[in-house]
Length: 238
Image 1 (tube, one colour):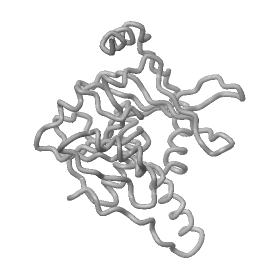
Image 2 (spheres, helix red, strand yellow; image 1 turned 45 degrees about the vertical axis):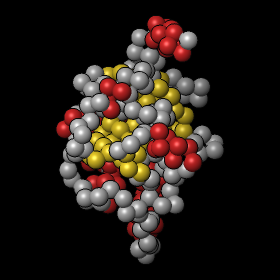
Image 3 (cartoon, helix red, strand yellow; image 1 turned 60 degrees about the vertical axis):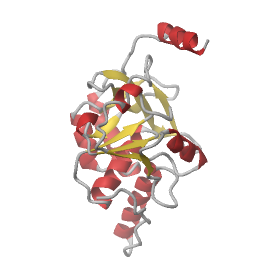
Image 4 (cartoon, helix red, strand yellow; image 1 turned 90 degrees about the horizontal axis):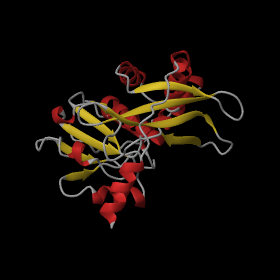
C-alpha cells in the first residue's frame, strides 16, 4: 500500500518549475543574506556564481515579493527543485518559505562547498539551505577547515536522498548537523551508523541563529567597545 502511494505521488507530481531569476534583485537578496542572515559573503558569492543561489521577484499582496532561491540538485548536478525564502520578514519576525513547484526532495538536495559528494572528505547534513551556508561559514572561518567539505540541506525532510547518500565515499567523515533540539536529535539518530552528531554551537538552536548572532556581535563591536564573540562548539575535527 505504501509503495502504491509513493508511485501515485510520483505520477501526480507536477513538472519542475524553477523560479525565474531576477538578476536586478540580486543585490537586495545578497545584502539580506549577508547583513541580516550573517552568511559569509565569499561563500555566498561562490554559490551564486555556480548558479546555486539567486534572486526571484514575483507579485505579492503588498507589492513585489523578493525571494532567495536555493537550487537542489541530484548526484550529477541536475536541478531537482529549489528551496525558496522571502527576504521580507513577517510581523512576528519569521520569513515565508516554500519549495519550487515540482520539487522532488527524494531526488536531490541543496549543497554548498563541494557539490560532488564523491569528492568530499567531510559531509555535514543540516535542515535548510540557509543553515547549510551558515554551517559552512562556521567550518571555514571558525574551525579553519579548508578541505573538501560538502554541507547538505534536507529541506526539512530529515534524511538524504538515497542517490546522494550512496555517492558519499566510505572514507568521508559524516556529521549529522541537524538543529540543537529534540526534533534535530531524532533526525540525527535516524541517519544511522557512521554519522557523528554535530549540533549547532551551544545556545543556538540552528546554524543560522549562530550566523545572525555573529552579525549582531560585529555590529555591536563596531558601534561600541569590542564584545565577547558567541560561544562555539568544539565539534568538527580538523
